[in-house]
Length: 158
Image (tube, rainbow, N blue to C red):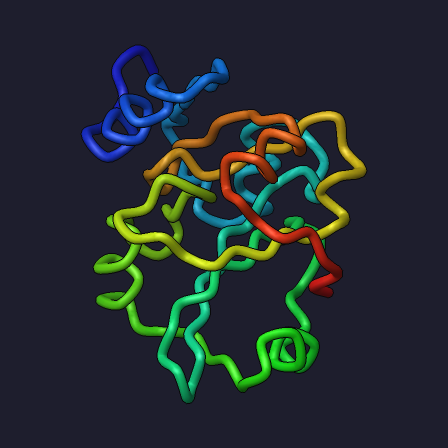
């Protein structure tokens, strides 16, 4: 597609202000799931960055986990890392905190700062692909840039 949707364009405009060259691409078909994104891009499932927002059940604080598309987050392990149980928040909480809807949340550049954890498996790839702010939008990024720009803590999340 030559012109980005408003949501993807909003994120592309944000990316232009960073010190790295990142370009949002948008597909005709959905790339909302990790498998759909990998199929559209033609990359390995593990190269897809899933942006999963959780909420502490006691503190109610948001926690973002950036995990490989090939992995599932071990919630019990994350409970231990955070010192409290976590749960998946509702769609309103996600949009209020990030500015994006579920399935479109990029790994950084949210309305509010969010504590972020990065799946160590993402660092095994030369490049990874993350959401570009719309269900069918993605951008390629170096894993080191993902860590730096998200201010995430690399850990085992699976």
